[in-house]
Image 1 (spheres, rainbow, N blue to C red):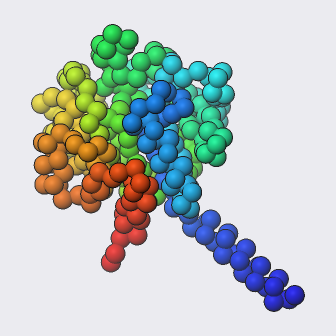
Image 2: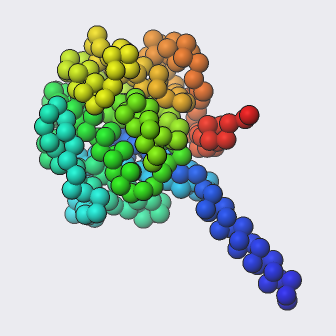
Image 3: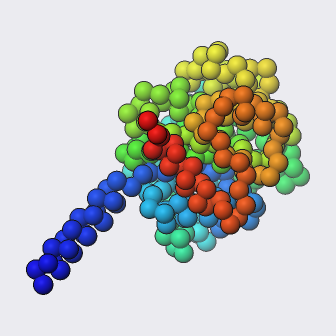
Length: 291
């Protein structure tokens, strides 16, 4: 009896130690079901965090609160303690509102970055007739900075950040340059998944200046200085990422060549039956590098 009790205590201590040591993965995504209609990326961004959580890691997931995301139907509510700060984009103050909801079947919370100026419209990156929003550059800046500032306020220090969708593509350069000395974020590894998700129009020619205004140097932003098209923005994300994942069977060949030149830790495209374990192992290679 005494031996059984001792074994129970040892097992309880082990379980608590494992929980305390669980690595923290932050997912910054452009879309996720059930909050938006199902697409290939939205499905990945729903299933991957859930699967990684089931494999023993602690997760947080963020996406924008587009106007098409029904607050009532999805039971979103504002997190007052996280809201209330303003982010300056192009010399203009924009309020940052944080909301949260739960995917009950996955035991998973999703945090939403909200702002009436950028995310009240129903489209993700374009209106109903397919015309891309002219302020997509500022929406990307606001989203990335909003997530990183919110994570700091949460006092939840991620070990690894995984970005999905080009709206999150500025995260690696912001993490390594603007937040490179921040104790809450500086130790995080960053992964960028490259999808075949191009936008048609080049982002505003002022993107370079707007990001540079956030403390970047000319050298940091050379890839988007001539033009901030999808290829340039993706290459910028790859350059500052610690690891790169191919999200579709085929991607832009120029981007593929750039990934190879940069010699990043790379995970090629994975089929549905392998991608969950492959992603988990890829994270572990970054989190537990061999000496």
